[in-house]
Amino acid sequence: MPKRLAVVGTATLGVSAAIVLGTAGVASAHVSATATSTAANSYTTATFSVPHGCDGSPTTKIEFRVPESVIEVTPTVNPNWTITKATEPYTDASADTEGHEAAAERVTSVTYTAKTPLPADERDTFSLSFSLPDGKAGDVVEFPAMQTCEQGTVDWNEEQEAGEPEPDHPAPSITLTAAETTDEEHGTAAAAAAEATSTSTTAEPDLVGRFLGLGGLVLGAAGLVVAVAATRRRATK
Image 1 (cartoon, rainbow, N blue to C red):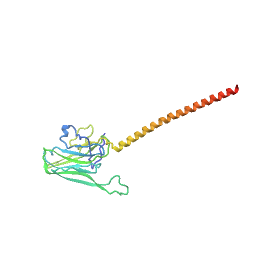
Image 2 (cartoon, rainbow, N blue to C red):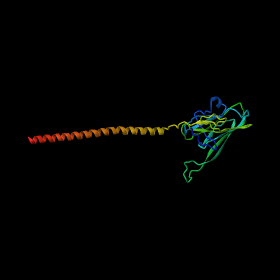
Image 3 (tube, rainbow, N blue to C red):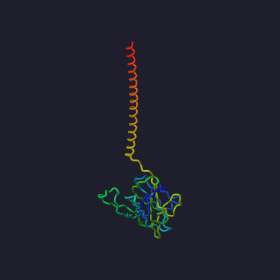
Image 4 (tube, rainbow, N blue to C red):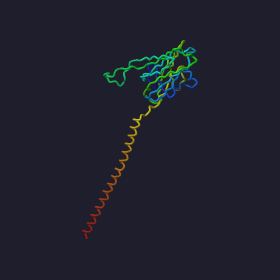
């Protein structure tokens, strides 16, 4: 079962090569997203699409809740919307026990507020850039979104469970792929392989040398025995 990475409240962050929410026909009716990269620990830009209003009512605001596993978020400017970010205190897990590293802030949500309400029959997109969290291939992360309209709201926060019917209001989700191998990691692996090959190559001649040396000792001993025997025969005569 895919692991869902922790998020603020009941939300979770989901990241995938192309965020798929059910079938293509149904997904077009939901708030969905696509990401430029889905590799764990990579930097990506996720673009969220809002395809319609709330039962015919124009959209006035869309809030994206950010998972705890994501710290820095950079929203892309949309000229038709104003942007606000909510934050909370955050201390890096690498800070020492005496707290020498000062606490920073973590983005908890990004809200786009319409300068003019988005008509219910029109769509718009919103892009957020951030570093994906660590994880293994198949981990699902979700970005729950609250859509506010002139009349009513829709909370896109429901998780898609494997083997279950698609919920009415699924959260935009992405699935992590394996982390990319860096040049340094590749170089380390290649060096280790080369060293192992070198060790194996030098070991073989050493083993052959030992066998040759042992064979020489045996032949030398045999020659000595023959010489002693010949000497005794001459002495007897």
